[in-house]
Length: 326
Ligand code: HPA
Ligand code: ZN
Image 1 (tube, rainbow, N blue to C red):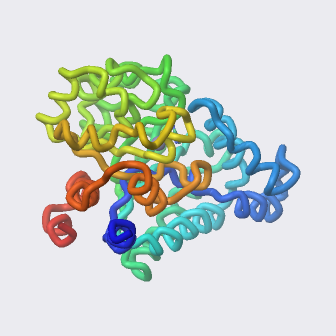
Image 2 (cartoon, protein in one colour; image 1 turned 30 degrees about the vertical axis):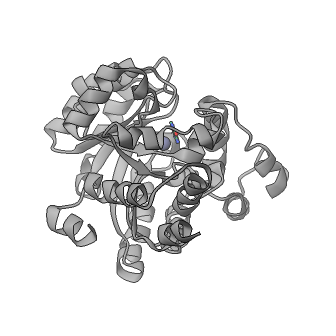
C-alpha cells in the first residue's frame, strides 16, 4: 500500500499530546520501583487490562493513577525522552506537548521539577533528534478557576519556558466559560491558547472557546459538526482542529473508525490534523493514527498531504520555520 509508506515517510508535526499520556506501563513499573511508590496494579498485564474505557472519565481515572509514579526531575526527563525517541521513528520533526501541572503539584511535585525535566529532554531532543518543540501548560477543568489562577501565578518564574496554555480533563459540566478570567490573563500576557472542546461536550462549548476564551486552536472539536453555523465560523477563521482518531475510538467518541468524521471535516473546509492524544493508553503513536485512518477510510493522497500540512500551518512556529516544512 503506497499511501501507508507515504504516511510513514512524511515529516510530521504533532500538536495534541499529553506527555503524561505517553507513560507506557513498563515505565510506570520502572518508576514505581525507583521511587518506592505502591501501585494499585500487581503487574504490567493487570495495568494494561485496565485500559478498556467507555468514556473520557474512565480513562482519566487510570491516567491520573498512572502518573502518580512521576516524582523527580529525572522521571519527567525519562518520560519525555521516551516519547521523543519513539516519535522520531515516525518522522516527527515538531511537537507541541501538554503537561498537567496541577496533577503533580497535588502530590507535592514542584513546577521546577516538572518543567525542568520536560524541558531538559525537549532541548536534548532538539539538539540530538532534530525535533523542535513548544510546551503548553494545561489547566485541569474539573478543578476551580481559582486553582487555575493560582497555577498561573506559580508559573510566572517559568514564563519564558512556557509557550501557551490549554484546558483538559473532564469536559462535561466544565464549560470554557468557567475559565474566562484565567484565559483573559493568559492572553494579556501574550500567550497562545488552545482548549479541549467538543470531545464529549456540546457545540456550545466550542462557541465559548472561540468567543470567550479567544482560542488559537481547538483540541478535538468533533461535536462542532453538529452545528452548521459553528462549522462555517471555524472554517472562516481557519481554526486548526487537533483531531485524535485512536483516542476517539478508545473513548467511544466514535463507534468505529469507518465512521470517523476527519474526512468530512476536510470536505467542510476545516483544518483538521492527526494526533495521538495519550498514545500509551489509546493504542498508538501518531504514525499508528495515520495508519488506522488509511486502513479504515477512503483517504486520498491529497487528503493525506492536507492533514500533514495542516499540522505545520497550525503549529506555533514562526513563518520561516513553517515554510521550511511546507
Ligand atoms: N481529553 C481531556 N482531557 C485529557 C485528555 C483528553 O483527551 N487526555 C488527557 N487529558
Ligand atoms: Zn487531549
